[in-house]
Amino acid sequence: MNIDELTSVARAIVTGQKGILAADESGPTIKKRFDAIKLECSEENRRRYREILFTAEGVERYLGGVILYDETLRQSTADGVPFAELLMRRNIIPGIKVDGGAKPLALHPGEKVTEGLDGLRERLQEYKQLGAKFAKWRGVIEIDAADIPSSYGIRANAHALARYAALCQEAGIVPIVEPEVLMDGAHDLARCETVSLQVLQTVFDELAAHGVALEGMLLKPNMVIAGMKSPQQADVRQVAEATMRCLTRHVPPAMPGIVFLSGGQSAEDATHHLNAMNQLGPFPWQVSFSYGRALQAPVLERWQGVEQNVAEAQKILLRRCELNSLACAGKYDS
Ligand code: 13P
Image (cartoon, rainbow, N blue to C red; front, side, top):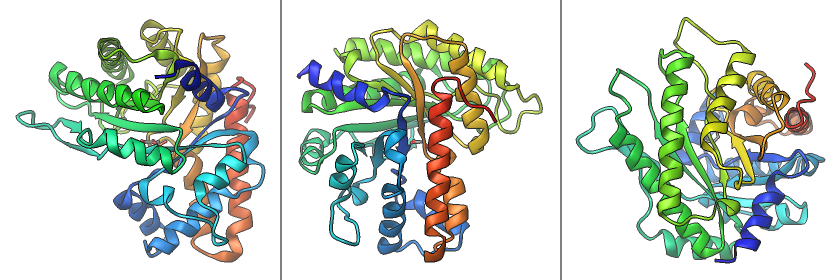
């Protein structure tokens, strides 16, 4: 493992108020997004859509990386330029989602563990050849009744994340470690904070046990937020304070960057929260974004699959990227 190389890629993704566009929706997930705008989920429509995202003018000022899905990494622009190459030419680092999705955890009803470790070493070699310089693996932790998540459920997900991260570093690929505590459910902010603390503590324990070099990875956590069905929604400052309390307690300063997922928040909320967190800084790591829905939802809504809407949709993407970049410095002003 060449730690210097991994470190320089990890840093390049987040330095200069840059973040990540998560465009790595799996087949079923992108179908859900297209269904919402009544667009057929054909391979060509998926390709067209990703081309719109990756060719939007100016986004290279705010995006250090884009996460792709297996199919997308193998696709090209209409002119035949492979997407990974297009992004590299624009100085945006291409990455790849490598997990196989969250599946029910045996003997633990209501909990999940992410699959995809078998054959990962070989897949990483291929992804590297195709141009990916970083990868992403998402572990999913749901909060439900008092005993969910169990400490075993958390441990199982943290273990898989650490095995994945070690395999990535062995292959010379920067791992993004994503333990997502879901915001579904009716729990309050305090419960999310307790669970998120436990998750982060376990994840960093496992990363240490597996020998993962923190300098050559990025963390993609959830924000600490009340469940969507909770009657007690926290305000922006409470979310920012609880999230940063949690992260400063458990994320070592050796790690270069924290790139939040948006997890179902509105585009505006995700930007507000990121901004409020950065206003509490400085922190030992860059505090940035790796948003899927919070960057793409307004774009899809404007595009609707219609060619005449492409330019407007791209402007919306540029604007969201710019606002989140400002939020990386605590300088977003709604
Ligand atoms: P959201 O920002 O929509 O949560 O997506 C980020 C992501 O990559 C989830 O794995």
